[in-house]
Length: 434
Image (cartoon, rainbow, N blue to C red; front, side, top):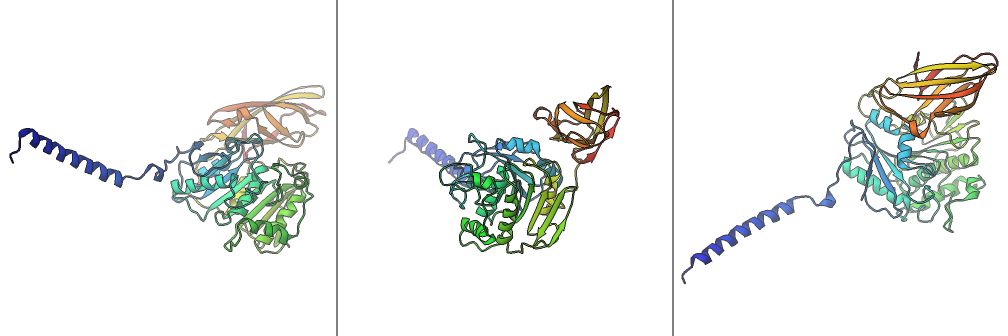
């Protein structure tokens, strides 16, 4: 049969199309699927991550990755308090700055329900894979491990108030995930349990729920029945005057975690690392004891202050990891003036960040001259009113860029000495004065 020019052209076109299609198919088969690729977040900035995996309670995920993130970094999950958020936890604690120094990654889970409290009460929350907040947080960890090839043997949880309660829950639900936790003003795992849909358990918050160590330990073990692996170490903090989650919960936490970790309830070491603090260690005497408990005499529910995260980091064992320390926020200068009359005065303080890194959240400590008592102030929250005072940032001036300043002040009574305060430290580091 003869072949016409038109048929020949069609055959050549078909051959070309088949070749192109074969090349496209090969390229598609060799390329990773969208679900298999994870995009890294921008460095040195808090970033929201979406689509991170199973998230039955609609949590938000915020991630901070330092510019000098290490290969196979550790991961710290920093869990906020009621009414808080991931960004508030980022701004109000020093975990991001510590990440800058040591090269680890920080996950900041954020609640979207109206109460802004984490679910530590429902049966779903108190069971591994139960379908509430812990599942979403576990998905955040999995996403981060995948994105940064994180070290799965160095994953830690910490939190304040509701976040401290969630820290207890996470370590109970996922003992195979976490190496250690640090809970600031929390309650034992299972203490807040309810079955009526309520998020609040008044008996637990009031400190009236008590169990034997074995009973507390059984509640933890029931979250992941049959698990026989290593259990995460636990550090707990509590103020003796806590009127939100009563101080009795501190002792119950100690009973629970010493039982879970199989160590004696008799302290192996007791000391006072700071004025008014009593630290007890159980099962060992060093920085990485199985259980460490810090009691703060005369302190209420809002006990967290700058510098405590660094102590938690030491407990985690991350303090010596990562690259050499980078220039850290804290270098500062303070200008202080007073304007006095009779038995009163006003003081104006200008705080300047003389470092090379932005300060995100600050506490300015100073000493008032004898006989002076602060009656009101602006630009910061002042406590106590006399003696050694700490001024904590307001929400609108928490960040101080390098070479930038904030101005704050207060009114005070005096009994004759109207001098300016002295002994200024910013986030625990001494400031120069002018």
